[in-house]
Amino acid sequence: MVIVMACAGNGVRYRSETTYADGRSSRSEYNASYDGKEAIVMGSGGLLLPVSLKRLDANTVMATYKRGGQTVATSRRVVSRDGRKMTITTNSPDQSGKNILSIGVYERANEVAGMEEKVAK
Image 1 (cartoon, rainbow, N blue to C red):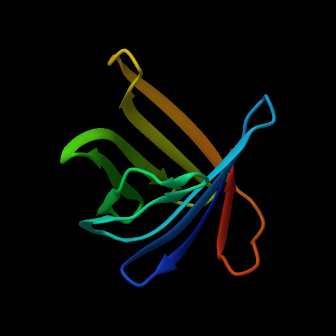
Image 2: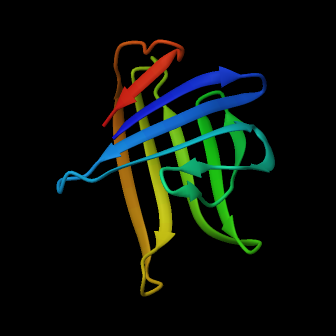
Image 3: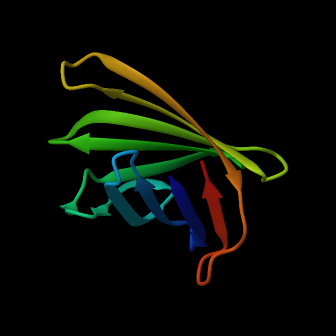
């Protein structure tokens, strides 16, 4: 997975691209402010769950994803003090409803044209 983020006003411009072991790939992107208001998330196949972002401190952002007004997933994004690593901890239910915790650790890579930051897992 590659995540590309750039500052956008009081928020972020986000894009992720994922390539799976079987060769399939997907992408998602959004522009969202850190004010807690929902933002549209576009994916490879169309609209995805909307996201709302809240900045908890200078290095931490909480993302909430909702369906029908109900929270279905949360992600906590923490960037290291030196800005070189980002850890994303996500809580979401699997198909049976059991809560799944996933943790992704990303390292900062080279800049991408048009975007200030690229992080690869």
